[in-house]
Image (cartoon, rainbow, N blue to C red):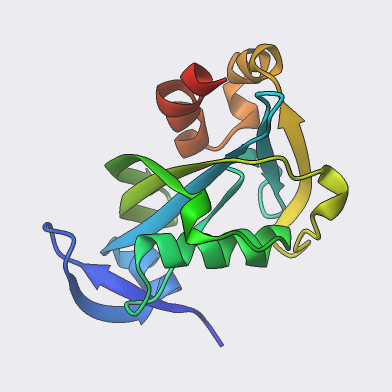
Amino acid sequence: MEEIIAVVNEKDEVVDTKQISYIHKVGLLHRESYIYLINFNNEVLLQKRSDNSLWDHSAAGHFSEKESYKEGAIREFEEELGVKIETIDLKEIGYERINTIKPNKKNFRFVKIYFIKKDIPLENFKIAHTEVSDIKFFDKSELRKLLQQPYLLTGSAKSLIKKYILSRL
């Protein structure tokens, strides 16, 4: 069954729910959370998406009208990476409206960006291979090199890493 998520208005207030494919087809405004895990070596965890083989946020996703941004972030982190985190772990570092238009997808969303400062070894992750093909910790130097090859990153990860994450490493 396809995921049903909240549709919001320009004030980020829930006004409806629809299937995610319909929301992206017609370009309805919705909500997403993006999470960046930074370990004690000041390395950021990125995931490589299974659907497009691009590096992306540590975890990200949509959520239902009954979930808050934080609740959605916590659930997505566990679903994609197999590790449970707590609300206290999440620090909100940004809130933006991001619009992306591709030939077959209109992605208009409000996004809350979170980071987690915690040591979680790679072997503790149990990635959901339907969504994530790989994970890797990147130090600041490796991240800068990755950013010089923008075709390897999702558009939102590229801009948000520059804006919010590099300064934290």
